[in-house]
Length: 95
Image (cartoon, rainbow, N blue to C red; front, side, top):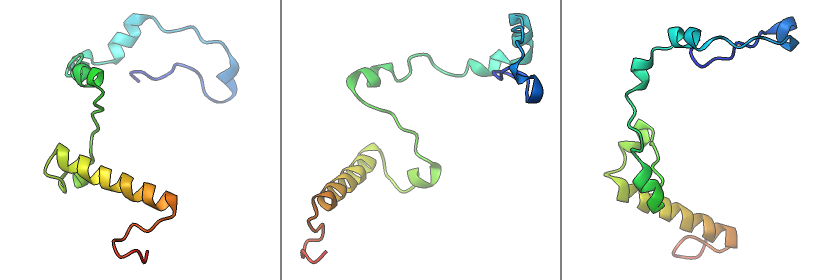
């Protein structure tokens, strides 16, 4: 029940519920598993304007690396902009 609300369900949901003491919360949550994260892991990238994105495994296996993903997204953006302007995205111009 770690992180879940202690708010009652059903007919009792409008009743006021006293919050549980912190000791009860700590007993329900295994804080050892929460210590696996690294604080500020992406802080430098975020400050530089980089936005880390987690790709699904099936998508990630199709790309050699970050630059390949960026190039594919840039192509998609160009195609979307071209279509939005109403011009043909094909080299021959026949849509």
